Image 1 (cartoon, rainbow, N blue to C red):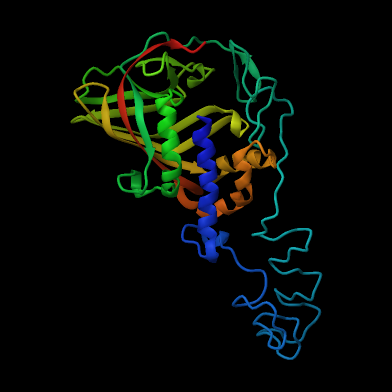
Image 2: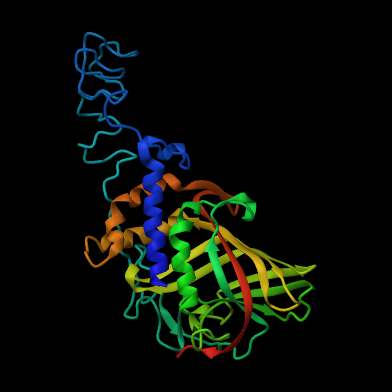
Length: 376
């Protein structure tokens, strides 16, 4: 699994580099536009004919400069009191300054969960001892529920790939097309090696042609043996406070053999040692669609779509940056491009609010599977 997400993050960095190439961006928003620090047209060495906006020349003052020194116009680079936007010599860099920002971990009074900077609190890498769960205050408390011991009809994702374009994706959105060619071979290999196990449980479904309403649960696990259709689940696939599935699509339906579920949230809580421990990703407004085949849990033409928020991804990138330089970590070669990823975010309506995010679109097929229990 670590190979898949290492490739993903390196691909994100390269996407940022491509988006910024030549100063021409097609995917960013105006507030993230990159502008040169000095001079027009790239000619920064001319002094005989000052560029428009160069307030250092007295012979040809800029439009609006009426010779007042007490209140210099915005952009007057001769004044120290009011530095212009883009002046990198000031202690308080302006918007757009790519100087590395720091993140202060916050684990005060916390024994589990996230530290706010991509790391974890507590002695168990954010987790709690067996029989306890991490509550709303990020402290481990005794659990009062039991994990399920039986499951409804279940299918396992047996092929998966990031869509190369937005065709067939929810709402026609997919910002990760440039990642596809780099990440998909590793994703395919991870599935073949049994290192990528996502299962869908069709709770209470007996008619796979038409079922008006049911709960579709997403579970994480791995095959008992390589190539087996029997799976062992990760207990982390369930909420520790009430033992309900972490990924749950209420009011899913099957109509004429077509599965439709969502919107909901699609969580991935994955141990990625190469990327600094547990990698937590959440797709907001996630939806699932697929064509059921042969009246069973098998399905083709599956699509999972959703939005990864900038506010969720930023701490992950900050955590990666904090581990560099390190010659043993391949992603460190791309850390310098991480700041350019801001160019890729777009504004999407997330629960009635405009938020910066990346639209993700994963295509899959589903095969029948049997849940045998939990991983030791």
